[in-house]
Amino acid sequence: MAKSQTVHGQWISGKSRIKCNLPLIIFKENDNIITYCPALDLSGYGSTEDEAKKSFETTLTEYFRYTVNKKTLAEDLKKHGWTIRKSLKKEPIPPTMENLLQRNEDFNRIFNNHDFQKRSTTVEMPALV
Image (cartoon, rainbow, N blue to C red; front, side, top):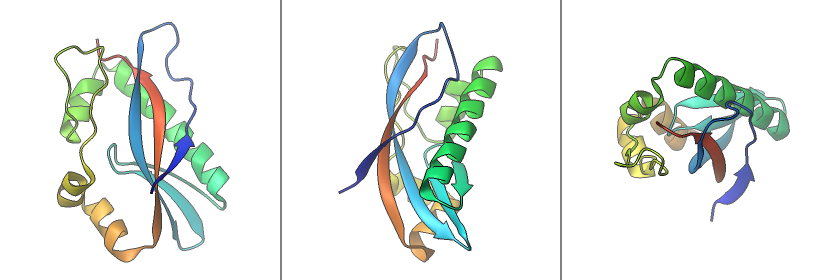
């Protein structure tokens, strides 16, 4: 069973937010611990799991900041295989792990060549409106 992990970030203030569940993969490559989110194709790394988590939080924060500023968040989520609901204030649905394995070469490589731990985290993301 996947462990739960909380990722924090302050990427948007004063705007509507929706909660979203993200799958995370934690694995070791060379001398680094990697926190990888195949649903967004984002990662963070460090010499410890805590450092990798903090690095991922920074990456995620900057991803939301950039896509909200450019007004491309919904478009980018769709490109990564997410289902966007008709009401943009409702939680978007990330792609399934099976879909990610088919569409994401990096995730397929990690899945087939590394020992990893699957985690799940709930994040607050900007509403898509």
